[in-house]
Image (cartoon, rainbow, N blue to C red; front, side):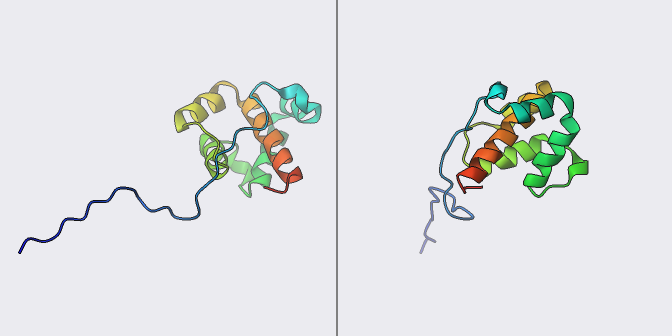
Amino acid sequence: MQPSQVVIVSQPGSGPPVQTSNWHTGLCDCFTDCEVCLCGTFCIECLACQVAGDMNECCLCGTSVAMRTHYRTKYGIPGSICDDCLVTHCCLPCSLCQMKRDIKRRIAMRTF
C-alpha cells in the first residue's frame, strides 16, 4: 500500500478574512485635514507619537515601516512592504499624515 498524498491548495488563515479597503485619503491630500497637515509639517515628532499611541505602540520607537505595514494589512489596504518602505523613508511626513487622517476617519466610522 502506498501512503495517500495530501495536496494543500491554500493555507488556512489565522483569523477571519480581512476585507479589502483603501486609504481614505491619498498620500499628498494634506489639505483634507489641515490640523494633521500642520502638525506633520511643524512637529513631526508629535504626530509620530499620536499615530503610535493610536496604534498602541511605543512612541519612543518612532514610526517605522513595520507600523505602516501592520496598519495597512490590518485594514486590508492594498500595497507591499516595498511600497511602505519607500513611502516611509522618502516622505515620512506625508506617510504619517496619511495614517493619522485614516485613523481619524476610521474612528469616526467606528471601524478602528
